[in-house]
Length: 184
Image (cartoon, rainbow, N blue to C red; front, side, top):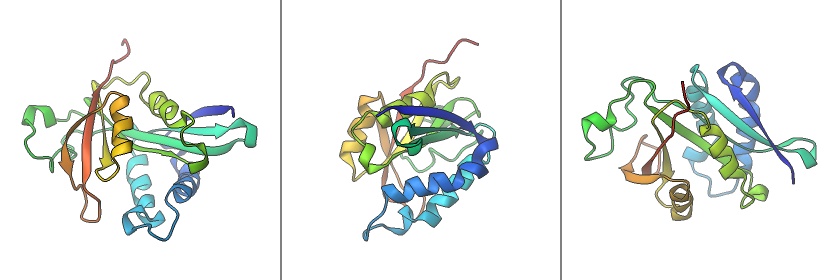
């Protein structure tokens, strides 16, 4: 399997929307799929995250299968005054102060089931964070998925606390990792 990584930004969002939704559908298909994991709900997240000029998306393509998209990762810097940290108890206000360039939020890392355990998610994630100027990265993980949280810990993240960012969301563990900004 030869996986190629391609970079996109907010100017490509409209063209990528259906592809992102289709890959997401492959990952969350099944009869026990909840409303939070529905295509419609995910479309709201894609539309929200991708409209800002700081949005970055990396898509992996299997070159051995006519370039089929096998997964993606995307995120954006948290904007000034972001409420990202507001539902996590016990955090210092200085820690939660966002400037628009302090924290990069990894919103999604999604890999189709047949390409899992191939290193694709690690490659997508690392490519997404390569060269970032922010001092740290953050993400949320469903608290009922300890294996996924353990993977994020292996990538250098530490758990900060739990949050329920939306009424229909599961309880999530907020995680953070320091970044090494590139030279300016």
